[in-house]
Length: 153
Image (cartoon, rainbow, N blue to C red; front, top):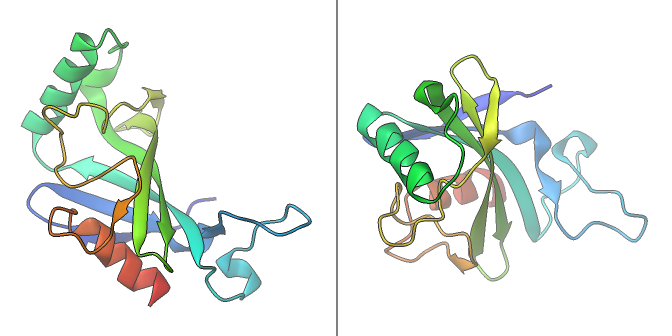
């Protein structure tokens, strides 16, 4: 069961985060991952599920066109609402990366695998990286340090 809480909003996107599902990305020797439910401290490397929702319909339309141009399926994407992403953070090195997972429509039906951050020429959201990048860089989108401050500090 998800427990979505608003974590960030600007003129471009609104984002929700499930603070109950923060995981230790390195895990323990027994293969069990810690979570907030265990009342353990946040590990140095952790990940959290985040939803990214465009506030402007033009961005969603650009995303559909981007998918078409890449030869990806667009069936049902006229009802695209949000993308579920996993944001991994390394508190020690102050780095992050975003792994887009799945796109959903307005009724929470799965549309398909997300490609929201794959267009390097014209990104739909500036400052979000799929490769390790600095949390504190001026080019990093404001959502990243906001999530980091909420969880790791």
